[in-house]
Length: 103
Image (cartoon, rainbow, N blue to C red):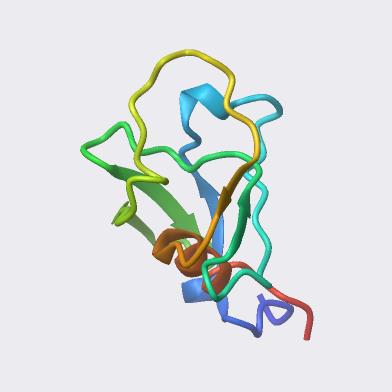
């Protein structure tokens, strides 16, 4: 827990639902550097619960997070979706701000 200083255990996501169309290796990749919302989703976060997904944090807490952008909330098609480039995406920015970063 002491290694999770930025953003801290209660704000560091550890696991989340992944969108069925991008599941390939059971890891949702994101970068803490995308805080402007510009970058890419290597895999998409889950959104199949009314545009929401479950997220677990390092302190043991969990939330149901609602995504804001239509680039993040997608219908399930069972067609492979890989890297989605986005600009000013509030959901990518939110993930980046909740992704642990080096001290």
